[in-house]
Length: 358
Image 1: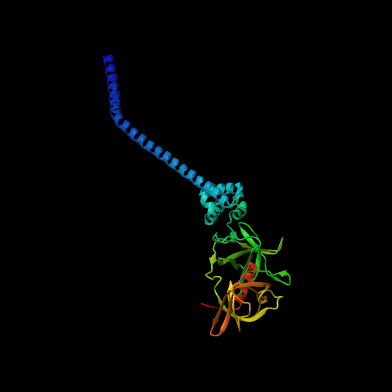
Image 2 (image 1 turned 30 degrees about the horizontal axis):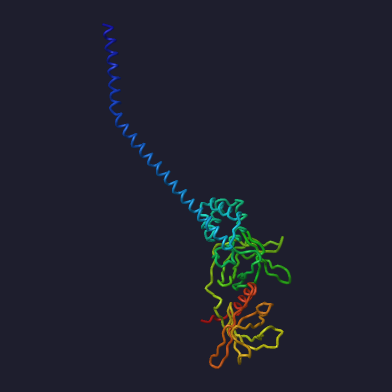
């Protein structure tokens, strides 16, 4: 009976094992269906990824082609970008993941790319090349096609008016930018008897610059410090907040003062005495008892305005001659006025606290 007992137990064990195996085999069909669906979903995602990557590469290729076409077109127009400039634009665009075509032809996009790089990698060597690159692309203050959007567009040697508030009153002077980089710019402080005035106690300064055939801009900068070597200078921190004034060249202000006007130059005998009635950044109108012989529209006249610290004679063109209620007026438009003299003129007009004419 022992052998029977052993056989029965072994049979029972075999029956148990076989039953469990049959259970797993019964579920294998459902498992296969799940695997097939999972594989299909993975395949769909792979196909989507491949298509997206292909479309993205195609778009980048089209952008590069348009970039090269516009670059070539610019060369034909005489706006020749060097290969070095092009490489830097491509490098800058790739570093900040922007369209090189837009960075090349739009100074707002260019400055945006530079700002992204500055935040991402403030010590990147590329930033040292930005001032030169900005100048190569024409994204500087004197190019009126480029919107003036930050003070990094200013250039060394440029004139501007500087004002500081002291005891509730604004005091201004005309200064020069000594140096500029991507972090700061330096301007000359005012001088008294040949010595620079210490302005380090002031925290902020107001600046005014004028762009020909465009208008006047103002901005406020914080003073970083005042240095005495290698040159005495006020070190200002760059700003992106620029305000364009509504004042235009033909905005006139009421001012009365006598002036001698010469019909050719101050060495000539032909001249006339007049009274300036109103003045603007672009010209002035003066009153005469009678229109002098030889004065007609289109001729040039010369006069001095030493009160405005303008040392050279001002050249102006007669643009209009009018008579109102028996009074004769000659209207002048300044010719070839330098930025420095224009700033002096602005300061002179502002100092008289004039009434703006409608």
